[in-house]
Length: 123
Image 1 (cartoon, rainbow, N blue to C red):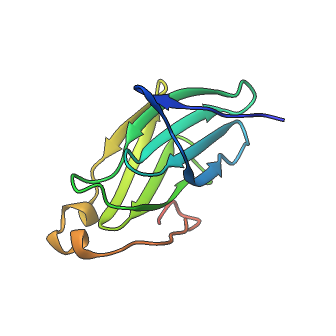
Image 2: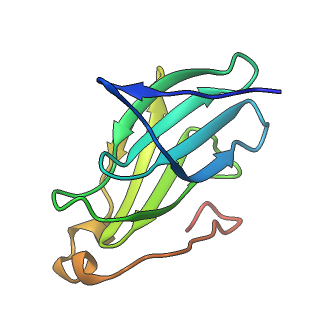
């Protein structure tokens, strides 16, 4: 039985709004709730965090879901109200990946609540 605890600065994350395992079950990502909306990468067998990033936009919009790409566990997607982001995991850090949807002005007005990966690495 593993218990995960993450502290960002002085305050511990009070809730997780989403969690997802990598395809090989080695890693877990957890999406923390308000006010910081921190995405954390965990090593499941060691029950310790490897990296974290705040993923909400400047207005602190709600984040609904996070997931690993099922064929490439180094690729992560996060969606929410006006938020559609991809990250690549490199050396324990989340590196943002630019995408066309996040650049569109209309995307900021969309509320993304669910997503799924297709077999050819498309979302």
